[in-house]
Image 1 (cartoon, rainbow, N blue to C red):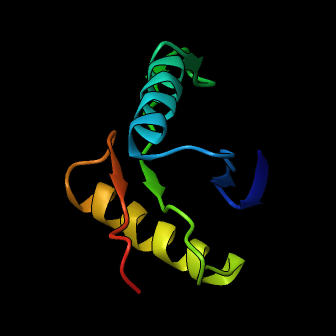
Image 2: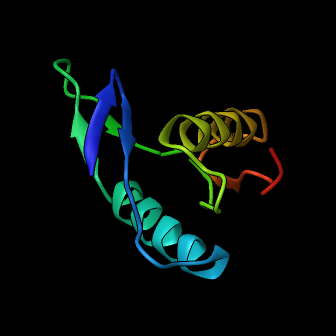
Length: 91
């Protein structure tokens, strides 16, 4: 896992498929949703995470995977946030 910038992070899962990505995304979302932060004024803040994912194939590059995952992330945000979306495996 590494911080890409701002509030974006990259996680690389080795040798997995859509089911594995879904399981990892669900676990990550559950962990984030149980986290509460307290604002300076004492207000409790709840967190959520939107996830965009892409699966590598023989023609994938780091840049193409990042672009596909980014597109999937924006789809997750468009669909209501707090969810994950997998990029289609087409270019």
